[in-house]
Image 1 (spheres, helix red, strand yellow):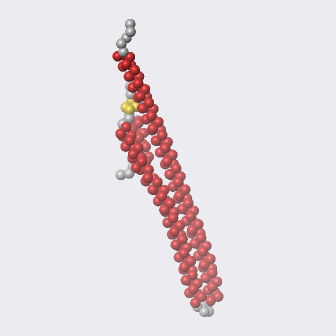
Image 2 (image 1 turned 60 degrees about the vertical axis):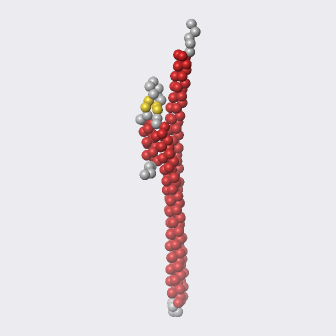
Image 3 (image 1 turned 180 degrees about the vertical axis):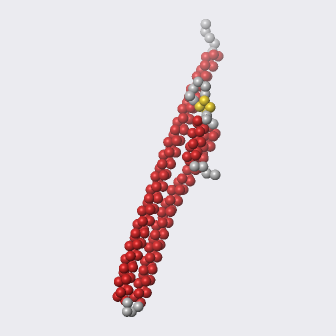
Length: 177
């Protein structure tokens, strides 16, 4: 079951919050394997967010294609209506005027439909891009914070190990009296 990126980041924060503290320091010990699992899960779930943006782009194309199909259908119906009217001998002049009006209305309606579909599609794409940017920034900020905290803990742990090693070496060294 795919997890939401926000849930994974909350679990990473929780891992840091619940980590064991080292005595006499503000350092914490975290479960490296668990942190790796969270990072791997983030990597696994990121493509789903990108797929949503692609689906939105595909949806835009479908809306435009549907609008074009509707416009073509309107034009074809107008042409058929014009042919039918012009075939009747007494109404030829009146039919031509009506056909031209129908064609103009159909073209206008088709153009408006396409324009509206393009505006909607562009808004959907812009919303998807904004959402993608927000998710990426949030992910980068949270990941940078988590990695900085981990780096600080590891640096402090290394310094503690080096001080302990130095203390052991000084205890083990022969004292000159």
